[in-house]
Image (cartoon, rainbow, N blue to C red; front, side, top):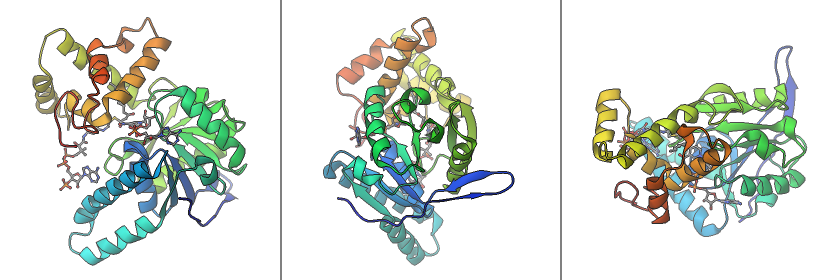
Length: 310
Ligand SMILES: CCCCCCCC(=O)CC(=O)SCCNC(=O)CCNC(=O)[C@H](O)C(C)(C)COP(=O)(O)OP(=O)(O)OC[C@H]1O[C@@H](n2cnc3c(N)ncnc32)[C@H](O)[C@@H]1OP(=O)(O)O
Ligand SMILES: NC(=O)C1=CN([C@@H]2O[C@H](COP(=O)(O)OP(=O)(O)OC[C@H]3O[C@@H](n4cnc5c(N)ncnc54)[C@H](O)[C@@H]3O)[C@@H](O)[C@H]2O)C=CC1
């Protein structure tokens, strides 16, 4: 359902930094990441419209956000439950939903795309949004692995395009990687950095290189864990225990793969193995592909490498 929302879109300049003030944010995709980004953007005072393909998905996204907000307030407002309730209600009031992506961007300051990890689908979406969004609006993708430039070329606003790469679960993970392509203007880049900080995140800057910073290191590590199992060297349970207790990771690689979603992992590996066929770090994994073919997509469906509660 489309809902009205307030528009504040302006620019200011100081001697050092020029940037746009971002108040109205459109998040396309209400899945694992989109819902998390929408939640944190609304929690930090932004007017948010979250878009997905149908109302059923959006209802689930909103229910997940409500659940996550309860976990946040339980800690943040432990001594003041009434203030916690007021906070949740304020956040939910700032969060609208829409099933029409084109309609949702008409008055937006910033679009963050968090849909399926597929270049053609992302390009098709951005090409349509480019025609409908205000000239001043900035576009960003939360892609895990696709070069930002390859997505941005579907629009006429390369100077107002960048990457905002968040981490799962967004309410807990403090980082956002801010990616610029050669065409990204300083004004856009500064606006993205400021927006990341306004969301309470720590920002790091990164060029448009495969996997940016975190995934360029994390994906080969996670895939090598899967290959260890393929080679029969250790079980997922033992590898997870080893990495948690021996290397201090909060989750082992298989718990994390289940948490991220095996489908998303496969999308990443499909893209990278095709693009970099000679790099063994990016080679396809028969085991991962088998699990995805069997519908074992991880926590989101209740089964991946482990059986989990949905
Ligand atoms: C092969 C290719 C692969 C490619 C992958 C690419 C994907 C990407 O592009 C980039 C990514 O995002 S990679 C994933 C990055 N995330 C991680 O590494 C998460 C690792 N896990 C953790 O940090 C903690 O286990 C974690 C913070 C999640 C949970 O903490 P704990 O382990 O202590 O467990 P809990 O007891 O469940 O939680 C403790 C408290 O944390 C709060 N909390 C957790 N989840 C929350 C959520 N979703 N919303 C709000 N609050 C949440 C909460 O306060 C909880 O306490 P309780 O509510 O009392 O349980
Ligand atoms: N899962 C993870 O841990 C992370 C994923 N990412 C990236 O974020 C993006 C989204 O990933 P997830 O949230 O995990 O996926 P997801 O599968 O949980 O959610 C994707 C959502 O996008 C919706 N969608 C698909 N096409 C759409 C369209 N044309 N218009 C509107 N909505 C559409 C789907 O209905 C679904 O609800 C991907 O690019 C992924 O690589 C980035 C960081 C971490």
